[in-house]
Image 1 (tube, helix red, strand yellow):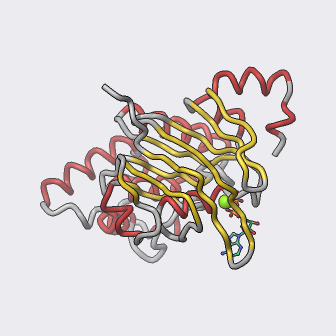
Image 2 (tube, protein in one colour):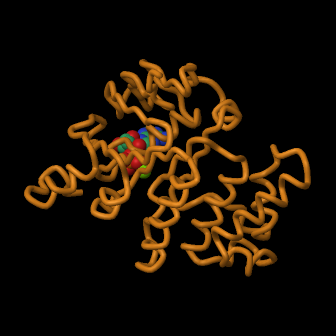
Image 3 (cartoon, protein in one colour):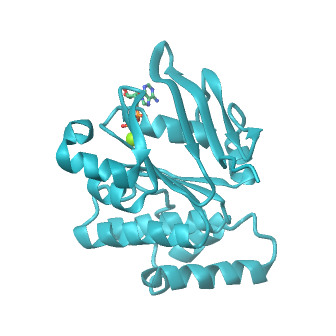
Length: 239
Ligand SMILES: Nc1ncnc2c1ncn2[C@@H]1O[C@H](COP(=O)(O)OP(=O)(O)O)[C@@H](O)[C@H]1O
Ligand SMILES: [Mg+2]
Protein backbone atom coordinates (compact mmCIF):
# COMPACT_ATOMS: atom_id res chain seq x y z
CA UNK A 1 0.00 0.00 0.00
CA UNK A 2 1.28 3.45 -0.87
CA UNK A 3 1.26 5.69 2.18
CA UNK A 4 -0.14 9.00 0.97
CA UNK A 5 -0.60 12.18 3.00
CA UNK A 6 -4.17 13.05 4.00
CA UNK A 7 -3.26 16.72 3.43
CA UNK A 8 -0.59 18.11 1.10
CA UNK A 9 0.30 21.77 0.94
CA UNK A 10 2.39 22.09 -2.20
CA UNK A 11 4.39 25.24 -2.92
CA UNK A 12 1.68 27.45 -1.49
CA UNK A 13 2.09 31.20 -1.69
CA UNK A 14 -0.32 33.62 -0.03
CA UNK A 15 -0.62 37.36 -0.58
CA UNK A 16 -2.64 40.08 1.13
CA UNK A 17 -3.02 42.68 -1.60
CA UNK A 18 0.58 43.15 -2.83
CA UNK A 19 2.29 41.70 0.20
CA UNK A 20 3.53 38.13 0.09
CA UNK A 21 3.15 36.60 3.56
CA UNK A 22 3.58 32.87 2.81
CA UNK A 23 6.39 31.86 0.42
CA UNK A 24 6.14 28.54 -1.46
CA UNK A 25 5.42 26.49 1.65
CA UNK A 26 5.32 22.68 1.62
CA UNK A 27 3.63 20.82 4.47
CA UNK A 28 2.21 17.32 4.59
CA UNK A 29 0.10 15.48 7.14
CA UNK A 30 -0.32 11.72 7.23
CA UNK A 31 -3.55 10.19 8.49
CA UNK A 32 -3.73 10.21 12.30
CA UNK A 33 -0.65 12.41 12.71
CA UNK A 34 -0.32 15.45 14.92
CA UNK A 35 1.68 17.94 12.88
CA UNK A 36 2.67 21.26 14.41
CA UNK A 37 3.52 24.63 12.90
CA UNK A 38 5.60 26.68 15.28
CA UNK A 39 6.58 30.31 14.73
CA UNK A 40 6.56 33.89 15.91
CA UNK A 41 3.64 36.28 15.66
CA UNK A 42 3.14 37.34 12.07
CA UNK A 43 5.06 34.37 10.62
CA UNK A 44 2.08 33.26 8.53
CA UNK A 45 0.67 30.38 10.61
CA UNK A 46 -2.96 31.52 10.73
CA UNK A 47 -2.88 32.40 7.04
CA UNK A 48 -1.91 28.81 6.19
CA UNK A 49 -4.77 27.42 8.31
CA UNK A 50 -7.19 29.93 6.77
CA UNK A 51 -6.13 28.83 3.28
CA UNK A 52 -6.70 25.14 4.11
CA UNK A 53 -10.16 26.05 5.43
CA UNK A 54 -10.75 28.12 2.26
CA UNK A 55 -11.33 31.28 4.26
CA UNK A 56 -8.71 33.01 2.09
CA UNK A 57 -7.43 32.23 -1.42
CA UNK A 58 -3.92 31.15 -2.31
CA UNK A 59 -1.92 32.86 -5.06
CA UNK A 60 0.00 29.84 -6.31
CA UNK A 61 0.61 26.19 -5.50
CA UNK A 62 -2.14 23.83 -4.42
CA UNK A 63 -3.65 22.16 -1.39
CA UNK A 64 -4.80 18.56 -1.69
CA UNK A 65 -7.00 16.70 0.78
CA UNK A 66 -7.02 12.93 0.26
CA UNK A 67 -5.57 13.45 -3.19
CA UNK A 68 -8.15 16.00 -4.35
CA UNK A 69 -7.41 19.68 -4.92
CA UNK A 70 -9.40 21.72 -2.40
CA UNK A 71 -7.64 25.09 -2.60
CA UNK A 72 -9.40 28.19 -3.88
CA UNK A 73 -12.90 26.84 -3.34
CA UNK A 74 -15.48 27.71 -0.66
CA UNK A 75 -15.24 27.33 3.13
CA UNK A 76 -18.19 24.92 3.13
CA UNK A 77 -16.33 22.71 0.63
CA UNK A 78 -13.55 22.26 3.20
CA UNK A 79 -16.08 21.42 5.91
CA UNK A 80 -17.96 18.99 3.66
CA UNK A 81 -14.76 17.19 2.74
CA UNK A 82 -13.97 16.68 6.45
CA UNK A 83 -11.80 19.61 7.52
CA UNK A 84 -12.66 21.89 10.40
CA UNK A 85 -10.87 25.02 11.68
CA UNK A 86 -10.89 26.04 15.32
CA UNK A 87 -9.73 29.67 15.04
CA UNK A 88 -7.53 31.49 17.51
CA UNK A 89 -9.47 32.27 20.68
CA UNK A 90 -12.11 29.70 19.71
CA UNK A 91 -15.32 30.51 17.94
CA UNK A 92 -18.54 30.34 19.89
CA UNK A 93 -21.81 32.22 19.73
CA UNK A 94 -21.68 34.07 23.08
CA UNK A 95 -25.44 34.65 23.39
CA UNK A 96 -26.33 31.03 22.72
CA UNK A 97 -26.20 28.24 25.28
CA UNK A 98 -23.44 25.65 25.31
CA UNK A 99 -25.90 23.05 24.00
CA UNK A 100 -27.10 25.26 21.14
CA UNK A 101 -23.52 26.02 20.16
CA UNK A 102 -22.88 22.28 19.89
CA UNK A 103 -26.08 21.74 17.91
CA UNK A 104 -25.00 24.40 15.40
CA UNK A 105 -21.77 22.46 14.92
CA UNK A 106 -23.78 19.31 14.26
CA UNK A 107 -26.22 20.78 11.77
CA UNK A 108 -24.94 18.43 9.08
CA UNK A 109 -25.92 15.39 11.17
CA UNK A 110 -29.34 14.36 9.94
CA UNK A 111 -30.80 12.08 12.58
CA UNK A 112 -31.51 12.87 16.25
CA UNK A 113 -29.89 9.55 17.15
CA UNK A 114 -26.64 10.67 15.56
CA UNK A 115 -26.78 14.00 17.35
CA UNK A 116 -27.44 12.40 20.72
CA UNK A 117 -24.60 9.93 20.24
CA UNK A 118 -22.24 12.76 19.37
CA UNK A 119 -23.33 14.81 22.38
CA UNK A 120 -22.86 11.84 24.75
CA UNK A 121 -19.44 11.29 23.33
CA UNK A 122 -18.46 14.95 23.68
CA UNK A 123 -19.67 15.17 27.24
CA UNK A 124 -17.50 12.16 28.11
CA UNK A 125 -14.57 14.02 26.59
CA UNK A 126 -15.44 17.39 28.19
CA UNK A 127 -17.39 16.70 31.40
CA UNK A 128 -17.30 20.38 32.38
CA UNK A 129 -19.36 21.24 29.28
CA UNK A 130 -22.10 18.82 30.33
CA UNK A 131 -22.46 20.67 33.63
CA UNK A 132 -22.88 23.90 31.69
CA UNK A 133 -25.21 22.96 28.83
CA UNK A 134 -27.75 25.64 29.71
CA UNK A 135 -25.16 28.36 30.39
CA UNK A 136 -24.64 30.98 27.68
CA UNK A 137 -21.29 30.50 25.98
CA UNK A 138 -20.27 34.12 26.63
CA UNK A 139 -20.10 33.40 30.37
CA UNK A 140 -17.60 30.53 30.04
CA UNK A 141 -13.96 30.88 31.07
CA UNK A 142 -11.34 31.06 28.32
CA UNK A 143 -10.46 27.40 28.77
CA UNK A 144 -14.08 26.25 28.73
CA UNK A 145 -14.79 28.36 25.67
CA UNK A 146 -11.84 26.79 23.90
CA UNK A 147 -13.11 23.30 24.81
CA UNK A 148 -16.59 24.24 23.54
CA UNK A 149 -15.08 25.47 20.33
CA UNK A 150 -13.31 22.15 19.81
CA UNK A 151 -16.46 20.28 20.83
CA UNK A 152 -18.45 22.23 18.26
CA UNK A 153 -15.88 21.40 15.60
CA UNK A 154 -16.08 17.69 16.51
CA UNK A 155 -19.86 17.66 16.00
CA UNK A 156 -19.32 17.66 12.23
CA UNK A 157 -17.19 14.51 12.58
CA UNK A 158 -14.12 15.93 10.81
CA UNK A 159 -11.13 13.88 9.73
CA UNK A 160 -8.69 16.77 9.94
CA UNK A 161 -8.82 19.37 12.70
CA UNK A 162 -6.93 22.66 12.35
CA UNK A 163 -6.20 24.17 15.76
CA UNK A 164 -4.96 27.78 15.91
CA UNK A 165 -3.11 28.43 19.18
CA UNK A 166 -5.57 26.53 21.37
CA UNK A 167 -3.51 27.03 24.54
CA UNK A 168 -3.06 30.80 24.10
CA UNK A 169 -4.05 32.79 27.16
CA UNK A 170 -5.23 29.80 29.17
CA UNK A 171 -4.41 29.16 32.82
CA UNK A 172 -1.67 26.51 33.30
CA UNK A 173 -4.15 23.82 34.34
CA UNK A 174 -6.21 24.36 31.20
CA UNK A 175 -3.06 24.42 29.06
CA UNK A 176 -2.21 20.93 30.33
CA UNK A 177 -5.79 19.78 29.79
CA UNK A 178 -5.77 21.22 26.26
CA UNK A 179 -2.68 19.26 25.27
CA UNK A 180 -4.30 16.12 26.74
CA UNK A 181 -7.41 16.75 24.65
CA UNK A 182 -5.27 17.06 21.51
CA UNK A 183 -3.70 13.68 22.30
CA UNK A 184 -7.18 12.24 22.84
CA UNK A 185 -8.23 13.52 19.41
CA UNK A 186 -5.33 11.57 17.93
CA UNK A 187 -6.26 8.45 19.91
CA UNK A 188 -9.74 8.49 18.36
CA UNK A 189 -8.24 8.59 14.88
CA UNK A 190 -8.27 12.27 13.98
CA UNK A 191 -5.50 14.00 12.05
CA UNK A 192 -4.42 17.30 13.55
CA UNK A 193 -2.63 20.38 12.32
CA UNK A 194 -1.67 22.36 15.40
CA UNK A 195 -0.41 25.94 15.36
CA UNK A 196 1.29 26.83 18.62
CA UNK A 197 3.77 29.07 20.38
CA UNK A 198 4.11 26.75 23.37
CA UNK A 199 7.15 25.07 21.83
CA UNK A 200 8.01 22.63 24.58
CA UNK A 201 4.56 21.11 25.08
CA UNK A 202 3.93 21.08 21.33
CA UNK A 203 7.14 19.20 20.55
CA UNK A 204 6.23 16.70 23.26
CA UNK A 205 2.79 15.79 21.94
CA UNK A 206 3.22 16.14 18.16
CA UNK A 207 4.65 13.65 15.67
CA UNK A 208 6.32 16.13 13.34
CA UNK A 209 6.83 19.87 13.36
CA UNK A 210 7.56 22.69 10.97
CA UNK A 211 9.16 25.91 12.15
CA UNK A 212 8.06 28.92 10.12
CA UNK A 213 9.64 32.36 10.04
CA UNK A 214 8.62 35.27 7.82
CA UNK A 215 6.39 33.02 5.75
CA UNK A 216 9.09 30.41 5.07
CA UNK A 217 9.65 26.97 6.56
CA UNK A 218 13.09 27.18 8.15
CA UNK A 219 13.18 23.84 9.95
CA UNK A 220 11.23 20.61 9.97
CA UNK A 221 11.49 17.15 11.40
CA UNK A 222 10.27 14.60 13.89
CA UNK A 223 9.16 16.44 17.01
CA UNK A 224 11.13 14.12 19.26
CA UNK A 225 14.32 14.99 17.39
CA UNK A 226 13.49 18.69 17.37
CA UNK A 227 12.94 18.51 21.13
CA UNK A 228 16.47 17.12 21.59
CA UNK A 229 17.88 19.79 19.28
CA UNK A 230 15.96 22.57 21.06
CA UNK A 231 17.44 21.48 24.40
CA UNK A 232 20.97 21.86 23.00
CA UNK A 233 20.42 24.92 20.80
CA UNK A 234 17.12 26.72 20.95
CA UNK A 235 17.98 29.41 18.38
CA UNK A 236 15.40 28.04 15.92
CA UNK A 237 12.73 27.97 18.59
CA UNK A 238 13.06 31.42 20.17
CA UNK A 239 9.64 32.89 19.52
N1 LIG B 1 -6.36 40.29 6.59
C1 LIG B 1 -5.08 40.67 6.47
N2 LIG B 1 -4.75 41.73 5.66
C2 LIG B 1 -3.49 42.10 5.50
N3 LIG B 1 -2.44 41.51 6.10
C3 LIG B 1 -2.70 40.47 6.91
C4 LIG B 1 -4.02 39.99 7.13
N4 LIG B 1 -3.97 38.94 7.98
C5 LIG B 1 -2.67 38.76 8.28
N5 LIG B 1 -1.90 39.67 7.64
C6 LIG B 1 -0.43 39.79 7.71
O1 LIG B 1 0.11 38.58 7.22
C7 LIG B 1 1.24 38.18 7.99
C8 LIG B 1 1.00 36.77 8.56
O2 LIG B 1 -0.06 36.83 9.48
P1 LIG B 1 -0.64 35.56 10.22
O3 LIG B 1 -0.85 34.49 9.23
O4 LIG B 1 -1.80 35.99 11.02
O5 LIG B 1 0.58 35.16 11.17
P2 LIG B 1 0.63 34.29 12.51
O6 LIG B 1 -0.65 33.53 12.62
O7 LIG B 1 1.83 33.43 12.35
O8 LIG B 1 0.78 35.28 13.64
C9 LIG B 1 1.43 39.24 9.05
O9 LIG B 1 2.40 40.13 8.59
C10 LIG B 1 0.07 39.91 9.13
O10 LIG B 1 0.19 41.24 9.51
MG1 LIG C 1 -2.06 33.57 14.14
